[in-house]
Image (cartoon, rainbow, N blue to C red):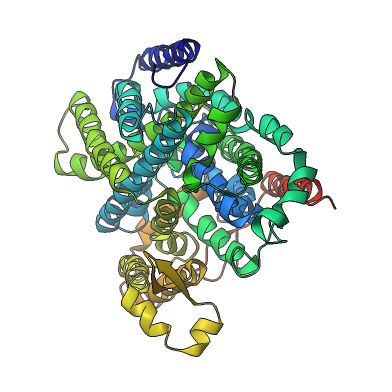
Length: 573
């Protein structure tokens, strides 16, 4: 039935029932919008698993395995692009917690005004439609390949959507965090369950090393850097884009701030993502092993992971694999859905209808979540492929990053500057994505020879496109430049508003602190002292504490250790 043994179906059924019961049970006591969106009650272990579960999903395994299948080991950077940003998570998480916000849009309103907040909501909702669609699409592709087409991609998109809607709409972020604990364990299992089996089939790392040059005609398939495609420049720009955009991903307000105090957020945000970086190694090696096993003869690389599961997993374990696969997407989609509902309800609807009851706002949050999920499902059905959707997601993540970071570090950044930085980046992205522009730019020899413009073949027709890292560098540079210039020639934000905003960042969270209103210090709390580099200027660059620096240094040592281990092991140095 469905291309599965009855034992596999039983394993799937147990997962469906168990995760639904856990999710609905954890929904008890959710009576207000703040409890639904930002519970602020979890400890370090739960925050680690929430950060890992929310940030890790099957489409990432699909994209890494697919890119590795076509490009070699360097395809790992399609998720390791976040690796060099991860140590900064230790510094970012306390900052996000100190905002004392329900949503990231609250932060934009506190720093600028309501118009910038609404702009952020619109960008955030688009991001989540793309994100949910990408995750559903990626998971559907794997399951269809795993079951030999007996469970078609389109059917599984509906099933997965129904599952995370049931408990996500009931309990909000509390349910998401509790279920993420279970689903994160399954996600780790999903990441590593195939690896020892497929490595054995191809003769281990040494067997891959011997076979890859013959199969691909390339001698750089086990290189972490592939000149001309995923080289140093590509990795550097993708990493910068990721670092700028990570904290303004709306769901990361939850992954950094749903803990009791700042340290829970820092440990959870960095720790959960470090686990993900290790799982990425397993996805990459599985893709390389598939390339050797199938001798490069797979028409659709997106199906690599599912085909390997069907080929190697015994009866019973295939059901566990699919359950783990579902866990990866449901653990992320629920958090995305809740963050999007919080954005709309808190930062648009509640401002329009401020006198309604908490029960009313809860129902609005649930209804708006349905709309965003519907948009994601539509994109899942119409998407061309996982790699393209992933690249679009990277770009959406960064669109308001320039306005955010200018507002954090430079007091002179204005409302007009924030709008200009965002619209400038969007305009450059839009123009540089047009075939006519790439074709025009391709007429210049320096653009072709310098790799800015590349020629690709689509349906047998050669066309020009701007290479991804150059496009990113263009919209990042434009966003910062336009934001700075516009701020210098526009009216400053009121000094009182600025002081209230920066007081939030200077004042640590206290144990048991009760937050009555978003982005406001509790009554009677004394703001922390200003302790910044360049105190006589308008720059707000805080001096780090010893705790901040020690965690940051340890994180970098872990990053070096992960890269070094892969390089020594895979490249046999």
